[in-house]
Length: 213
Image: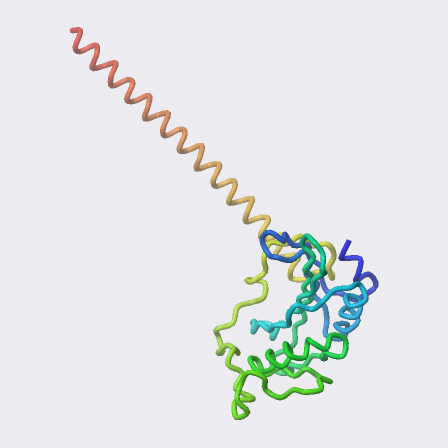
């Protein structure tokens, strides 16, 4: 299975995802220090890079790296790396996937994230005088946690006490409570309907008796 690609790496969490819902089969959270090792494994396994994108979340900047195989069926794997707002640096992977340089430069334009080791970090979409504009950075107080943006997932492995563990438990509990509430409402509706039907039947019976009298 695809998660075996990362055996021996110090990943923070590996999640199984529903490709019908998310377009991905696996999501791997890792530190930027092991990013290149993970990317090399994907390259050696025949994966191509689709894109690199950034998200400005409460915890910092989250880099998403999407990889896929040239074969039928869902194969997309996402690597996610978080860097703090006050030190938005991450190593380039363009020495492994040269085509990633375009995506890294685009992400730099939008978020002013530094890709260390990139051969060309000049603006690719913005004008030269807007190089540090970072138009997709969010205003203070406008951030959401990456946990709020997480799709449905199953944890295959993770660090102890990783926030995704608690989130999964909270979601499971919320789903259980919602199901219990829905069941209670269904039963209450059935009981109300039965009571109403009984009252209507009793009323009709009373009317019939009055008519006979």
